[in-house]
Length: 126
Length: 170
Image (cartoon, rainbow over all chains, first blue to last red; front, side):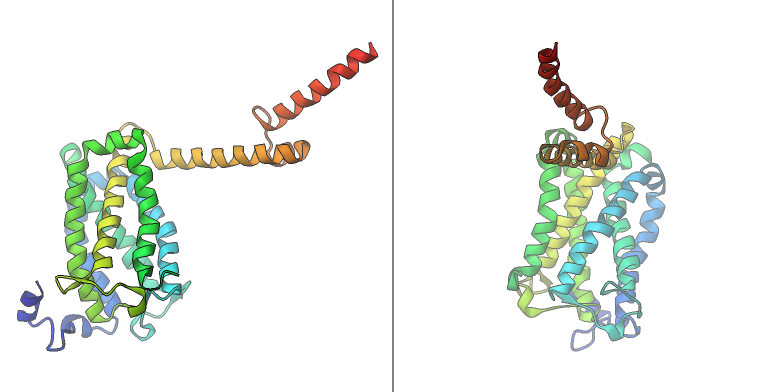
């Protein structure tokens, strides 16, 4: 995979991503690339299941936004991971960049829920 | 807290208890077992996807790990072991929850709401019992309990104390 990407000149000689470095906000660009792009076809494929099982989707979001946020904050506070403040959008909520909440919590959770729904409930409602 | 085991430790601490709760409870396990292969397939796809994407985020500088908080073991020389484990456990947990929740939704039950209500009721009941043993009257006012437990028990105690006194007077 890495070689394919290098061949496509997405990585430069030092192994840094060209495509994402073009953006001022690599975290936002990454979230868009990793979550938003695959979510478009996934949400379209799962639209009936999502509408039918909206409680499941909402509970998953609630679960991630509470326990996931605590986990995230704990990891950030204890220094497991860190964000470059110069390369994030700017607003910080409780020590975490704003894009974390929209991109990671909302889109990331939706991605996992959609893939799960696609595998688990396809036979019943599509 | 766990030094270089921190990332691994937090991942296990936050993922294993809910996973054990989901899979060890017989009522849930019976339903989950029917979707086991589908759950595993969703988990495998998501883990593979996350394991490819996460190193890209690290290279792009989206976030960074502290070297003294991770094991520094890279699978295939590409992805951190903890990142793969994170995706594996989180995907398995979420897929299990989705599977369970949609099965209950089909039966017209909001399982998460039911479990939270049950949990809160258990806490309230336990708290009520503890408080009753300390100060019987105050607890009933605080919890507004009329039927079971609290006030009921307090009244019964009151009656049982009175009866011998009344009988003595007669």
